[in-house]
Image (cartoon, rainbow, N blue to C red; front, side, top):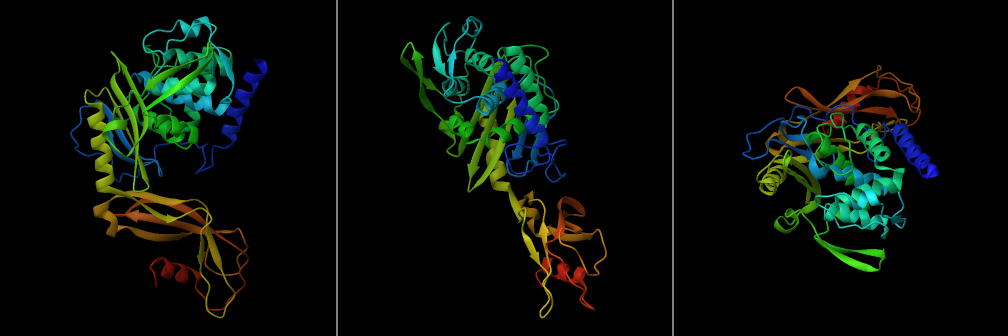
Length: 387
């Protein structure tokens, strides 16, 4: 078990090294990605706290008390599942402990000594919301639930969920166990990048296989949105007296994925569907550049000069504002040649109503020779304007 614990912390350290990486399953977000574009709208929902997030950009499309700390109930299991999938092997054999079997409330009725694969436990935790399954997962990964919770809090911090603190693996009530709609959206966004996570959260009904004793258990997902809204990708329900009815939901329509979180929401499924439909119908994501895209600034008869984009440049906007978008180049050096390959020459920016929405650095792809009378800055600006 000491080796298992060492491996778990090694994974956390690797994640810390990857803090600056965008587009992969390891990313950190030190502040909210919200360019003030669609901060708040008067959509009538029952939730005390809610958020709608663009899964691709991480931008907030709708915000109602999104940073208010609240009991997250079983939406906690999103992070338990993530760590179970990342730090454990799906075919690991788990022997159920007395502690795990003794957990109450929503369970998959584990008994001490039963043997079951880790992946089946994760499925039981996410589909049937098994509190006992979560404790068994934590014990398998870290040796005990307490050490696993330490990993959960570390992982939440690395993802960018800075207003979250967990004290257990399943969301059972505790005054020191809390999160926010925004933080839960970040966790869901991270989890949805893991194929195994997504395949589980989309399940309406399934069965899990116990190795010893040898039997199958049928499970039905607690997320009714899977039946009522055809674009749904999951993710997780949660309910306690203190938390009220909660839901973290994701949906994909026409290739675009949105994440809705509603906390203490009497009409959680209706609220989530209303937010998702509003997002799909009234907003869109514009892709201006992908990491590594090259901007050709060659002049006819001259030495070719190209600049490449360092990071993806995407923004989410209200559809009615699309024609107001401006693309700009801000220079960090003068436009005179020569320029060395890899040298930063400026920043590619996207603006709306004199407010910068996003930006990415531009770098010279290869060394450019001196060309008399050639204004590189003017050429780039013309290209951005389609001239």
